[in-house]
Amino acid sequence: MILALLLSPSVAATLVTVTLTELYRTSGGGCCPGGTVEFGANKTLDKVVFAPVIAHHHSGSNSLAFTLFRNGTEVYSTSWSLSAVAQAPVEYERSLNRTLADRFAFNGYLGSRSSGFAYLEARMVPILLTARLSPEDEPENLGLISDLVDPAPGSTHFRVATTTPNTLVWAGYDTDYTKKLTTDPDGDEAVWACIDTNGNSLCDVNENAARTCWDAGFDWYQGKCCGRDYAGCQFVGAIQNGTMRVCTPAPRERPGGRETCVNVPTFANINSTCGRNAAGEWEWAPLSEPGEIHEFFGCAENSSLVSDGKKVWQCGSGTLFGDASAMNVFAGVNLSGETHEYFCENKTITECGGRQAFASINTRETGDVKVFNTSSLQYCASDGDWTTDLDVKDEDSCEAAGFFWTGSMCCSENDDRGEYYNDPLALTATAGRGGCWNKTYVESGRFAVQNKVINYRGKFFGCRLNTTVLLLKDSHTDETLINNSLGVCGEVLNNAVPGHQYPHAVCNPQGVWEFTKELMGELQKTIKWSALINMSGIRQAGCCAFDQCWNGTRCQPLDAFYRINDRGFVCNLPSAAPQEIPVFGEPVCSTDAQGNRVCIA
Image (cartoon, rainbow, N blue to C red; front, side):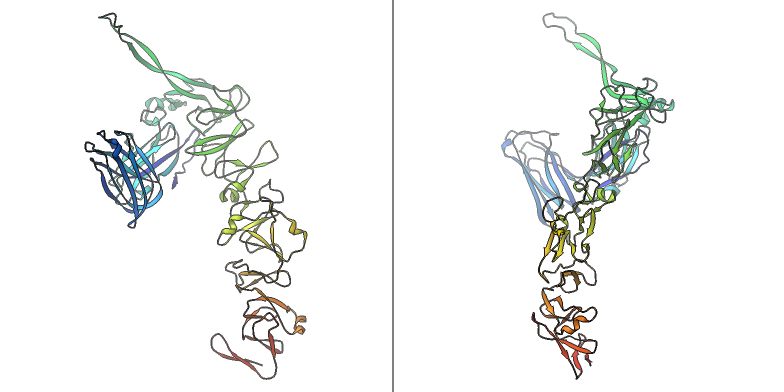
């Protein structure tokens, strides 16, 4: 589950990711911990973690069993056999494989002198929250915990965490900066986040020195003011941030001697570049801000910069900033387990933002197209990749680029010249979407060649073809594209057009696909009186079930009667031979489906 807070992006704003995990927590238990915890609702579990307090030395028999239940039935179990004395906070962990359960039970033996667990936690699948924050922003309320997780009555704790550098997150109220774990008994505590580049559990916006720097028109980062303390286009690496007193004990061979102490400078690695952005404002471009794009002007070469967390990449041919390197056409930046690609062109870095961009400027959305220094078009995919092949991506990427998703592939990108394919995923679907015919999407139940080649659940079927179209190959598998039906009235393509008045398709004796209501049009049936063939719309042969007749236009049930011009007919005994028997003279009567007696002359 991902909850995105779409804030108005600003220059040098960081994409912050926060995880909120619902816990079912217990502790204690002494030598032989055990018990059951009821959730009060079905929950999807991610993992179980416990930190034991084992204080005896018969450790070979230490063990713990953990079991999940749903509706009274065991759905998952795991166990540990501990071979060492352990004291919290050593944690033992097992995956619970996203199992749905409504309670868990545990039992074990940790020794007669042990105090059980410091804690045992059954953890739900984390909720991911995102926001875009800058150092000047006040702490951001990401939502009430009770609204975000919909806790059941048995919930006991909630934990927040982040992997975004220079970010402070907490649970509770706006000033509970150090609180990462809460019980939220009243349901009115929230998840909070702010930028904390100093790492001192104080939001930068609350640092007096930072406010002074910003008020003067400069930029603040890790206690340093860009534009006041450092000149434009200057890379700042290690800086002295204080001193530390280091003492050496007196030598043993000199009784009564004194220790020797000196003050040693300490350093912080700021690893950031100071410059002016397009608006002429001072701005830091930190190494620890992966994914954000910075555009500096007035330097040796106007350039874009982006960090991947390990190196600062520069797009521009002038003097490099610090440890930056000339950027490749593509460079990947990983943030919270997702990687986005960036490209450099005309001294500007641009990101494929996918589902959610890392940068606050120069981003492209899913489906956007870019022509690089080659003839191929590159499409921005939802996962943040620039790609020429959307077949290996997803439906959102394909359709956002203006094409059709056939079930497992995309019809049809610029580099797919003359693309034909059957879609294997659509073949297994209940109602397959379709296939690709010469770069054109053909929906299931529609014709690629009018009345001769139909797509059925992703695969192309021909009706008694004898042309060169049979030589076509599947562009992806190089196998024959068309499954050609050479017989007459063969297997019916059931529900070729779901919901239609005539939903099924069958290859008729005339060599064209015909739509029918019948599920079993397996036999060729013919009319007896050839003179009728010359009448408008009448055909001698059709495809009907074994217990039906062909009346020249459609199938008729056994014993049915009908009039064609001045003649009456009745469907006689079923066989492959002609079946329609003309009736002359006396009126022909029968009983219809409603039980009414009906006669025709």
